[in-house]
Image (cartoon, rainbow, N blue to C red):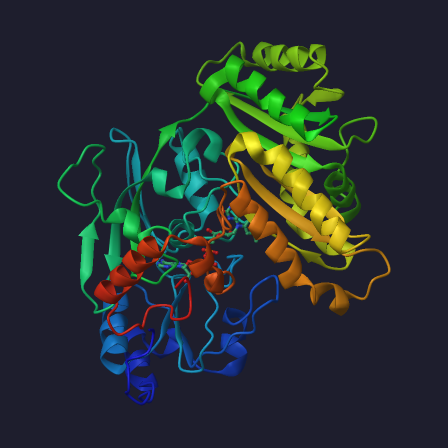
Length: 475
Ligand SMILES: Cc1cc2nc3c(=O)[nH]c(=O)nc-3n(C[C@H](O)[C@H](O)[C@H](O)COP(=O)(O)OP(=O)(O)OC[C@H]3O[C@@H](n4cnc5c(N)ncnc54)[C@H](O)[C@@H]3O)c2cc1C
């Protein structure tokens, strides 16, 4: 459905595209475009005719107008940190539209608690700008030093504070989007309440660049926390981790901003992977959780964290725990958690999944998936970690020691099949926060209600009738 039916593909008008942004920002040389064709997991090797770096919304609009008229596939790309291959161009006629130059923070409105950012603003810069204004922009994830606001919204990123603040789509008041035919939707509203018909923002967020190019967004800001407490906790089992989450939420409510799970193997790998990581606890434990509390109150949060850990210990849920005594120590706790995706590589190969199940089902899901996959691939090492408080499990499986890497990776589909079938059994999702991209597209008919899928296809046909926007992704 992504190609104009029956028409031969027209030549890509490279010079006309280049004229829109200027020669300096139109890359055609193979060496120059190479970094835009690969992603960090090296699963996809992309192909593209050129890379354009527009400097304004108007330039994006001109690019899409021309692409629509000539049937040129367009692949939006932000920080290129996506983990589903959505940002990789897979057609030699494709033109990558990099948002790297759309990097202005257009406005901070402290009375409205909002910040208007262009799509190419790097997440960390948005966070720092909020902090410099005594505000919080709570979206936070391991790739925050390079991923962009446009990419975050287009993938509807989750991250480590979704438990308390919601996912990316919950953090947006307004959007500016360029449509496939080059029209600009100027939806940069700052309203909390606006019931004037369909809420179109949510079509573009999570659409992974298949319905339009987001060029700017009005983001919600929150009061900066006045106190933070971070604990690193060894727990005996998954069920204990879940029970501890309930205790934490009962005592601290929405102040529990993160509740992250790590398998013992993950902490070992993180410590081995980075000289900056130290295991904060004296002895190894089968499971760990990282709990973070944030509050507007200047005092009392430490006592709340201590109460949570004391109640957990009394109930046999906590084997050992330490509360960070400095920001540096808290950073070390977080480093262990955030380095885990990279630390997996130290095992010589892993098959990773980003799934979600209802929070209450996380222990059973992880146990059943680990046991089933281990029975099928003897010696495989399950490495579950993730955002337990959101029911979002990053369930990786590391290569058995001594097994050939290629032979191991050849079993990817088989392992995926087990994990995704179990996610369905537990009424979960095959993509919690990384999106569908190119990676999970073929699974959509298996996991989506046929009516839902047809509605999605109808939206795609309506908004992008010539199928130029990120073809081969999502649908
Ligand atoms: C170490 C690490 C940790 C991560 N942790 C998390 C995590 O905790 N939670 C999480 O959700 N993700 C996580 N990710 C995945 C990734 O960082 C997010 O998906 C991020 O939101 C992608 O942003 P990006 O700017 O890099 O987008 P890209 O990778 O460039 O693009 C991602 C998708 O969005 C589209 N896109 C990009 N910009 C636009 C735009 N302006 N308009 C329309 N479409 C656009 C692309 O076409 C593509 O489909 C992690 C990745 C890494 C490498």
